[in-house]
Length: 119
Image 1 (cartoon, rainbow, N blue to C red):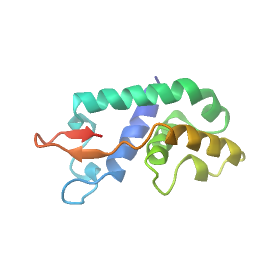
Image 2: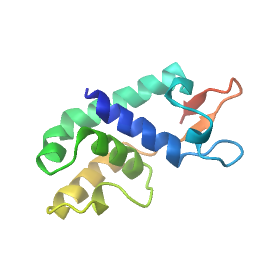
Image 3: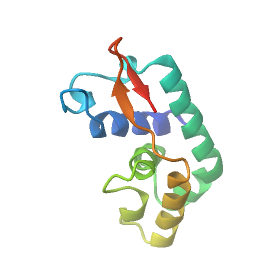
């Protein structure tokens, strides 16, 4: 798995998720605050997406970091993602959107131990 893909994914996850006080998680937390089991799930999902789609997104202008970022945003139905990048082939963006959405949503929350968990 490309580490920059995972980094893009985690960065998007933290700034687009909020803590219990409705602050963006990246205001008070970073990747080191993600629980082991949640990080392992993120890694598995990123690796699976990359295995099936890396050639497709690289050949059409996405870097690994942008693809990781868009994978998080798209799978969680945020207002941007693969479908809205300004690349020549919008059909590829739609295809990647469908593949990302097939993973289902993955939401973050702060546990009682002050670590970040996903569900």
